[in-house]
Length: 227
Image 1: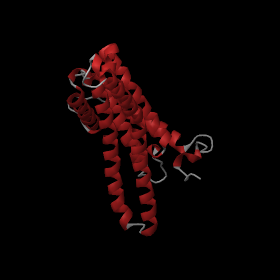
Image 2: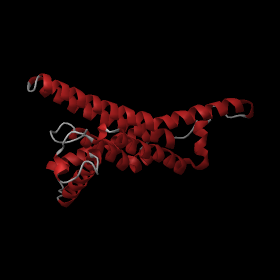
Image 3: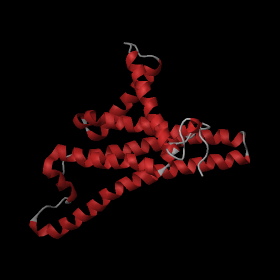
Image 4: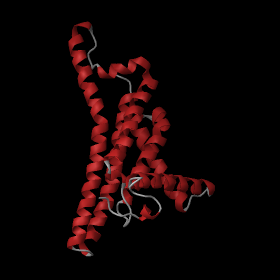
């Protein structure tokens, strides 16, 4: 039984799950904010333009510092979009009548799997077939063939687990935050929830950053030169 949300009056929750409708709402909010900012661009940024430019510059810096200038610049739109979208979806859970889409495992998996696919796609674009050397370990000689095969299996398992860990980490933290808020709201409706709301804001920010940072490091490992 899902909790009633503000979108239930226009979208039947039995036909469209709340996490899906709020996931689309998050997309519309970000697209709308981008269009508004683009239509009011100024040489000296103010208001929303200033905020968005700060976010973009931070994500470009994060990408370039971890991935390098060439690929970091090219991948910064993906990194920035992930961070802003996850952060907004996390914040939805702090608003009465809203649902955080990231508190559903299907939603977090829908972001983790594209990151997993993008990692190998850009790895192949950067290195071609030589990308698979990343899976063979540091020693690549004929006598070390059994060790190379073992390393390939271990690395393969490690890569396959990545989308699972990304999904479960974000999902688990968002569910835990929601449960704590609900329980404490029942115990002390005014005092404690206000403090926990601040903690929830911090958790939402940290989890969005952790997901984005891990995605950045995965992409960095894929496009870097194998040694």
